[in-house]
Length: 217
Image 1 (tube, helix red, strand yellow):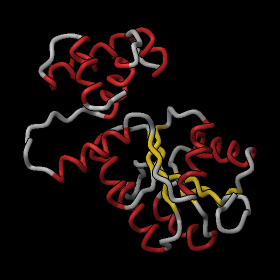
Image 2 (image 1 turned 180 degrees about the vertical axis):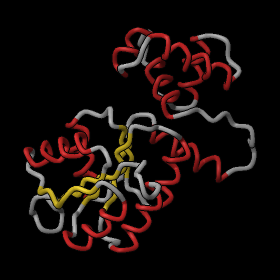
Image 3 (image 1 turned 45 degrees about the vertical axis):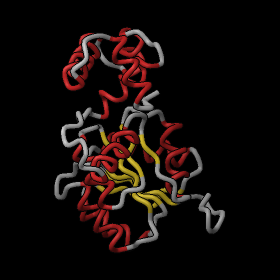
């Protein structure tokens, strides 16, 4: 429900992949959301925004005409009351930070379950920031980095590396992590090796200790 009116939340879905876009729109409608419309690019999203006045815009980061961060900026300039929730296949650090800087309320990976997406829409509509696991730590870490010049060489882990590090700290094995994140065992190992190199650590035990010390758990 819309926090201000108790009416179903109006959602605009913006994605250039029609099967994904239309499939998600149908599933959201089945779960009680009002579909304000669907758009395949930023220009169409802006036109529909003015015509339909959605509460939340689900926005892909990579569109054919404009970067997601720029679309976010323009959407909020046109209507500051809406919430923009990025839904992207990419966990690339700069794209995430650019979207947040542009005013996005949250950032979910497309690997999120439908229940996570619907909960995120409701949280975004209520003005609460929402991120896929691992991404919130990345954003917080970036703001901390910007707030201090004491450690200019702090290692920069990707969102996926942080996500895997968190699962390691919880005691999951590499095969268990691979199954949970729908990755190959080799991909998980590669991420771990990259993380070890960035942190200048040598083994899994040191990774766990680092995660606990940094609050990544």
